[in-house]
Picture 1 (spheres, rainbow, N blue to C red):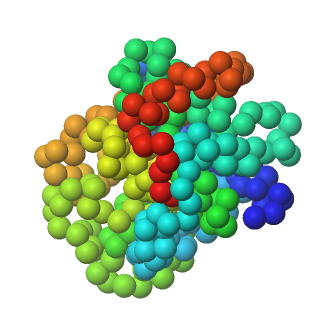
Picture 2 (cartoon, rainbow, N blue to C red):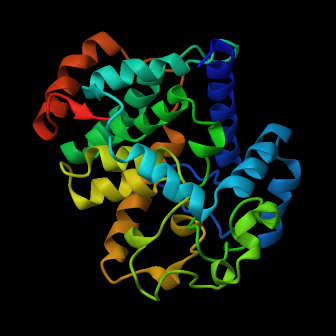
Length: 291
């Protein structure tokens, strides 16, 4: 992947994160009022053109066939063998040198998240989850377009809920012409469980599969569903929830503030923090992982 493409990926990611803060401006510990539908649509009208174009591509191309193809391509985990720290250093290639407002590395952004979780006194597995949650973005470095790596996720193979951001772009998706995929349940069953849905392909599903044999269920839910905003922020897709999903939803909602609100001007000292995090990683994960 050339340098210009990497810089563009990082820039779009930053703009998407900024757009999330515009849509969900509540700070940790603050319970805001319920957002009216018209306010949400106002956000769509004022969003940056690059964000609109991102979601146009995402909603057009994230079909059931595409998701199944990407799962088959990546979830054999046969692209590399790396430690977590090696993967973090690999991800550093996504630093956006064209952005005048930040020269933070991806490692520093991951440490900002995990350090805030740590300061708030959460369990060690929760701290590790903060460190890991965006590592799936290395998909960009293997040639995947931004719309297949980041952004809000949603189920494919059923009718898109109208609470998904930029819902109108689904009219361009080939699955919109398949009647079964436009039914409320689609290819699924009532109460089948959120984990049995095929969500749009991206970094959440990828990092979940890399570490799924090693972490508690709450941590895995945080990793797998932290971009599933229609579910954990908008209340969509409740028809698919199994009884056990209520606890997972609570875990994802507990993690979400750390995902959205922990970037700051306080730069973490990577060298000083590395021994702590290498010890934490070794407590839960093997020395190398398949990617």
